[in-house]
Amino acid sequence: MSSPIRVSAFFNEFSPLRKNIICDIASRLATLVSNYRPALWEQIDVQWEDGLSTLPELDALTISGYPDNMKSEWVAPDGNYLPNATTEEIQRIVDRKTNRIRCYPKEVTSQWLLIVLDGFAISSIAKITPELIAHPFKGKFDRLFLFENFGSHCHELLCTQE
Image (cartoon, rainbow, N blue to C red; front, side):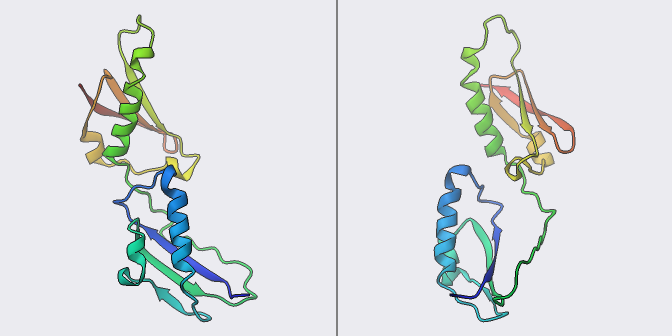
């Protein structure tokens, strides 16, 4: 039986994580980590040329060795870090919803879209930047809103008719 390890993975903010790639990333991460056997209290910072290149979604990876009798350790480095919501993510949502407009009742004369970041799942929390708010999104909506449930903030976004 091998000694326990702690793996600290720091994700690249320029490589958005989507549900459909998480299993693949986890598998590649597990494969890479299994190549390392850190000694007790040793800390290994995995370098790009030593395997980190197989995970472009990561900025850094550290593997540390721990004693067998250590029951648990909880750490939250940068626990307050939030990724920025990207214009690409919001545009994908607008595009998906735009495709549904043809199903709306014909009596509806004004199309509004409300996108909710509910904050109940870690994947539904993001930082809203001034650049995102100023970005013109393409869609068939008359008005476009982004609501942050966690902080009760509502932002009206620009939506240009296609």
